[in-house]
Image 1 (spheres, rainbow, N blue to C red):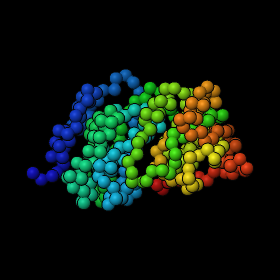
Image 2 (image 1 turned 90 degrees about the vertical axis):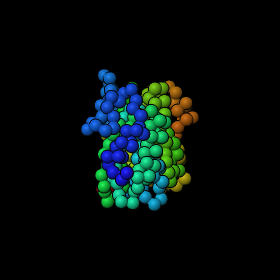
Image 3 (image 1 turned 60 degrees about the vertical axis):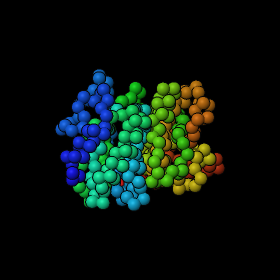
Image 4 (image 1 turned 120 degrees about the vertical axis):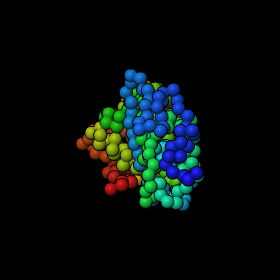
Length: 283
């Protein structure tokens, strides 16, 4: 049988198992899911050949996993968990039926690992391979970018600049849940476009400044402050947090939130200088 959109949908319906929360899944005009009476998180993200990955250098299973993990990382940044995901794929001519199955293998692997349901999407031909991933999540304690407080301690969950751009990464969902459940976390963001740029986004939304301590930032070279796709979390902790030593033993304490007039600065204990707003931007 020729490979086309009709038998691809049939393949997905047979491959993807519905959870009890999915009333109508792949194959209809819309999915129908149960979220009971609670607020939900909504997120979408594009993953584009030539921009986010090179087709010749990236296994198709990795492409599927990386595309989905970017959305999962944004759920982590809000202390949320994924429930339902959909993927629309623009298929370029070099991509075969088996390649699509490999992409799906990556998605299904993560759905089992992080307990979410794949509920639909769309397919079409395109000039390059494009994955548009959208997700629905839940959060018991939603953490925003915009609620950092003056005096907060600034932390990051892991070292910067360690991961190659075409590698699979682990979204910090577990760490986010631990932080939200046990500490006074006032704000959070994930590092997708570079540490200094993403911290600036958090500070801008919170109408605050910051002082960073250069010696505390886990980097080997300064350029690692600006490169994207670390997918660690930046979070700020209330100055009233009693278990600061516990946090310092698990994560990296890198700065303090200041008032907006202070600006965005870094110190090496000898001098203070302005932080350069460098990082990855699409346009």
